Length: 520
Image 1 (cartoon, rainbow, N blue to C red):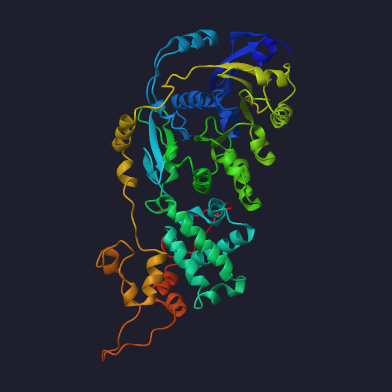
Image 2 (cartoon, rainbow, N blue to C red):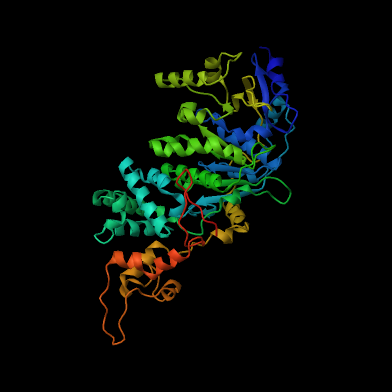
């Protein structure tokens, strides 16, 4: 196959993103652009390569072109160097040289961006999820529970869902686990096998450690509405949503699983649209290997099904990692677009990974084993789907330079942008409303009714709840029923039973991924 034949495979007629120029026989050919059709970006993709080969700049390049064409983008910024997408780039000799080599008319440009932070830790609008919507499968992954413990956690969620006990934060979950492990509550799950005291103890201890590590900040309300990720700016450009993760990069299990929750929640809410001329959203899943490391079979089903099915809802997912072997085969098979940066082959394991990577590409005119170890920074091997859904020829590519700032923006400027956002007031202040913890506490009697730890007595919740216990007309204390009787037969539960179909009272339904969503 000749250079002209490879170039012809990228001569698309519809809207497309410009990745760079063809590398052939040691030369860069600016008249042979390498592109990817906009319409196939919901067929998912992979951006891979060793550390320092230019993956982050590739994400930035693709994100800003998507934004320019009206497509919203989500970026997980693990290292904190993607915030520059909001600011114009700075001309310098390297940018000028790269632009000339690939035939790019480079001009500095910033793009509309929103910055988020998990639980508000770091620079960004706080992103929280309720425990109820996060679901047992994802939470078991975060807590690193074994299969038996994961199944027991699923039963606990099933009970809370069936009884209308909303698990807003981790204290709610601890309260329900403690109740079901008690003498009064143990019979509640008897018909489905129950939860052993030992397993309940492990879950409670794990939750306690999890909270002690600061994880309580990530769960609660107001819960983030993933519909925010689908917005466009007033000028029609797609908004680039950047989740700033440097403050939690030492908790990879947590942030990678939160990314999965965002995807699962989008899947849960978005309607089917079939094939579209442009995606509704392109979601870049950085450090993807963290999602799959040590994952249970039940958990692995979630990303596999998500990738397979979310395409028809107009969402494209790009996994970003070091080698294709970091991604399970069932997921990798769904990724139609590939940008493979250089790989290292210093050890036997590296060499094995290199050979495995080569086998994942279509037949090529290149010696890919040699090429992949010799690529420079900002160069990659590319194959994408053409407008008919067929793979393009493998093309060694020198990538374009991003038009936005290649590096982080100043922290003060970032904070200023966050506070100026129309979303900041909506999500900045955590809200602690009545949920499972308060309802179980109310069932215990007057001594337990005042607010949660840290909430002054007589606050809004204390005034809105009436104790379950009381006295007769003569002023004598009535015998208080057991905790189980109070919880199951209380006015709270009777009210819930009568309100089936309402926002608060209906039984929670869960998606294939174990997540739940109830719109407010």
